[in-house]
Length: 318
Ligand SMILES: [Mn+2]
Image 1: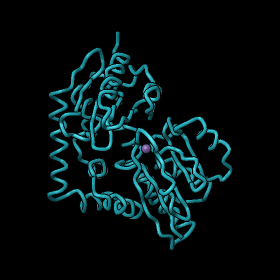
Image 2 (image 1 turned 60 degrees about the vertical axis):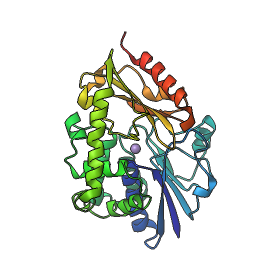
Image 3 (image 1 turned 90 degrees about the vertical axis):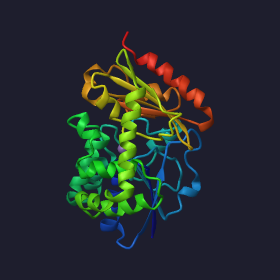
């Protein structure tokens, strides 16, 4: 049997979600299944192509719902789990018992482990380290910004590797390893050598550039990286540099999209007064109340910048 798992790409929680499901499927359903992986990134249009669903069973983890009849399993914990009202209705009518959404979970990894234990008698004890770290990382439950930015823990090193990865073979390999190997062994194998040193240097450079560009005004840190060639950054850097801020708004440009990221300071949540998913939904984006984003076509960087400046204004404390 061929199983296609579509997971949130370049995301520790997305990879761990796929790993938990993999272990479950091999243990409980078919030990001989051939499991294949595809990473999904948020797009400004046409999110799902039917040809993605080429397995006998097709699974989406840590990503939006798709009303395709070929979708067998679905797990998500995002507040904006549905692209449209029609998709949401389609999900509500589903009687397969294999599709689950719960935005109360900090990570999709924990949601999957919990649901599979409850409904399918899966024992996820062997994966508790994975569940623990996915919950910390995706839920931004670090004790402080230093832990989130200085990359000491094996799970943090692997997160840095995953978030900056461009090699299509690496994440499937990591997922298979996550489903059966301890994080400390994996970090020792993957987060070493020249390649990792380069990734770490990029991370240091991002800290430096954001430090130079970020402007803090009325509780909001704003920076535009669209002309720097930086295609991603650790989202805690702004809070590491400006611990007193409440929100961050940034603009990025990659070959795939222009992106506005909107976040709130995990160590200053008492001052958060906005639901960021709702704000981003108005521009066609989404996410969680604490952190959300909007994607625009690469050619439409101006719209991204305009949306970002409007959001900055809305979030500033008067
Ligand atoms: Mn997630």
